[in-house]
Length: 559
Image (cartoon, rainbow, N blue to C red; front, top):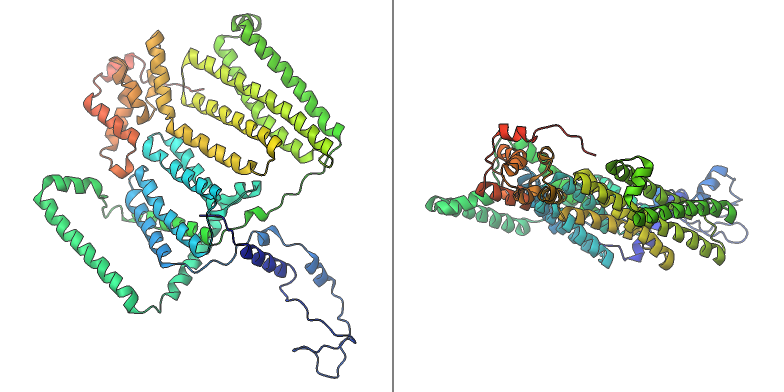
C-alpha cells in the first residue's frame, strides 16, 4: 500500500513493453563488413548473407507505439509470503464471522487484516510509503469508521465507496487524472491475477518439510482446544462470564453456513486483491492523454468573456436583492417565498456543474505556446471561477431561506453539501492556476473523500432532526411523518420533543429496531446503541390513534 520507488521496475517494464511492441525479438546482432554473419546461429562459413527481403508488415510492427494496455502492465510480483497468506485467511474469517449480521465495527475489523496483507506484500516488493500514500491509508480507515459510528445507510454507503477510491490510490500510487479515475479498476485485475499468485505460492510451499509447519499446526490446535475447554468451564461456572462470552463471540448457526462461506470467499478475495495490487500495481499514470489542439485567442476567449459578463450581471442582481430585500423581488416576480428559493437553488446548482465542464474544456483547447497566452488563460478562467463562487454562495443562501420556511430534509442537506464541495473544487482550480496543477488530481480525490467523511461524521439524519426540532420549538410547526423514515441517528434530537409529539416522531424508528431484535456489538453502530439506550430508558407511549391524528403516518413527497 505504497508508491513504487524502485526505478528499475519501471525501466524493466518499459523494456518489456518495447520488446513486445516490436515483435518480442532481441536486438539483432551486428553484421561485419562484407555482409558476413559470424555469430552463432548464422549461415555456415563460406556462404553469402545478402540483405534480408523487406517485409512491410514487420517494419510496421517495429515502428508502432505500445498500446495503453502494455504500458500499464505491472511488473512481476514477488512471491507471496506466509504472513500475507495468514492475513488473507484472517480477513476472510473476519468477514464471514463479523459481517453476516450487518455493517458496523465489524467492517473495520475485517479490513484491518487486508491492510496487513497489503503492507507485507508491498514490503516484499521493496516498495516504500510516501506521504500521499500514508494520507490515503489513514483516510481509508477513517471512512470505514463511519458505519461504526452512524446508523444511517446512505452516508455509510458513500463512505465505503470513497474508502475504495482511497485504497486504490494508496495501492497504485496514482498521481494523474487517468490514474485517479482508473485506479479502482485495478482491484478487478488484481483479484484475477491474485488467485494465480496465490496458487503459485501454495505450490511452492508443497515441498516444505514437516519440521517447519508441523509445530505451528500443533501449537494452534492445542491452543484452540484449551480455549474451548476452559472457556466452557468458566462459562458454566459464572453466568456473568457466560453472558460476556455470548456478547463478544459471533453467533453462527448451520443455516447461515452458505452465506458465511460466500462472505469468507469475498473477504479473502478482496484481501488477496489488495495484496496483489500492493506487490505489483498497474501503472495507470503511464496513460498519456494528448492535449487538444489549441485554438486561436479570439476563438477561445470570446465565448468565455461573454460568459463572464453574464455571470457578472447575475451576481450584480443577487447583490441588489441581498441589500434591497426579498419582499420587493417577490412582489415584482409574483413568486412565493418557497418558489423563489427552491427554483433558484436547483438552477444555480446546475450552473456550477456546467461551469466546471466549461473550465475543463477551455483548459484543453486554450492557447499555451507563449507566456502571454498562458497569462491570459489564467486571468479569464480566474475571473470565471471567482464569479462562480458568488453563484455558489447565492445558491446556498437560497437553500437556507427554503430550509427556514419549510425545514431540513435529507435531500436538501445532501445537495447543499454537494454545492459546498463544488465551491471547494473551484477554489482548488484557482489555486492550481497560481501554483501549478500537478497536484490537482490528488487534491480533487482527497477533497471528495474529506467531504464524504465530514458528511458522515456530522450525521445528516441527526442534523435534519435537530433543525426540525428547533423549528418546532420556535413556531410549533413539525412534520411527524417525515421522521418515520429517519435512522437511529435522529433519536437524540427527537427525544427533546414534548409528548405526544416525541413518541409519534420516534415510533417508526422504535418499530424498526424492535423488528430487528438483538443486534451483536460488531454489527451495531454507535448511533444505534445510543438510540436503544434512550428508548429503553424512555419508551414510546403514544398510541397509533393519537399519532395518526397528528399526521405521523401520512404520505409525503420530499424535494
